[in-house]
Image 1 (tube, rainbow, N blue to C red):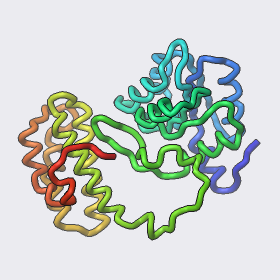
Image 2: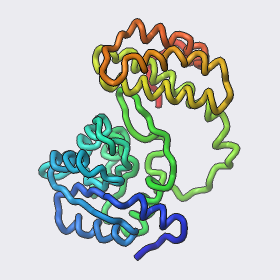
Image 3: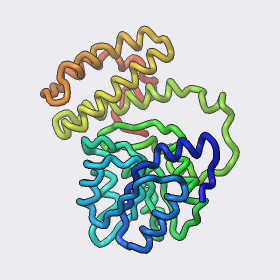
Amino acid sequence: MNITAGTNARQLTARLQRVLLLDARQASARMTADLVKGLGAGRIYTETVEAAALETCQQLEPQLLIIELAGPNFDGLRFAKTLRRSRMACRAAPIIMVTAEATAATIVGARNAGVHEFLRKPFAIRDLSRRIEAVLLTRRDWIEAVAYVGPDRRRFNSGEYQGPKKRQADQAADEDARRIDQALKILKSALSAVESDPEQARRSLQAQAQDLHAIAIKTSDLKLMSAVAPLQRAMIAVGEAGPLSRPALEAAAAGLWAFAPAESADTARLAI
């Protein structure tokens, strides 16, 4: 049955055309597939082996992934981390992890692997639909760091929250300053990883340059726009495969540290 209506139902259907299930148990996968079909899903692909699931991601670009925590031939946390750090077009696709073993450690592990939502078994269709609506209809910032790649962890399992909403003014307060602070912390971490993890450092540096530029445009901050420009030019120059020079990139980013809050200006610790 379709438990959403109107615009939300149409949006869900459009974003549920390709769904991947990673589940070792056929009966469990069949039940989940039936529930997702009831919400308007199109093609549903089921895999039981981690390597095959990654190949399906590469070839079919699922819009939503619902994965078990673990099975005989896969590790759900490793799968999520591998997808997030890959070059696949669907690397940012929402992931809902399900398991009957909902310990504090597994929940934290899912959060740190880049999973959007965590769902305990057994679950009802309303539980699954709430999670699916949360990941497909609600925008969540994407964090492209070095140690972590995935959705903003502050919003983890937002589909489970049913308490009072914050006032819009409270939600918007200091958001731009927070984003600048976060981008600069990630930028420092990425610069320190240029030699040890150049591929992810490259992606992270590109993402922070884009984010800071977007904030500058949004806030009409010409000083920030001028400060981020050298880093943008440096990343354009190296492209997707050119060698990264840490000294050159540090020089390109030098003007940005003036925008860091006083308490975090001298630390490279990633705190997101």
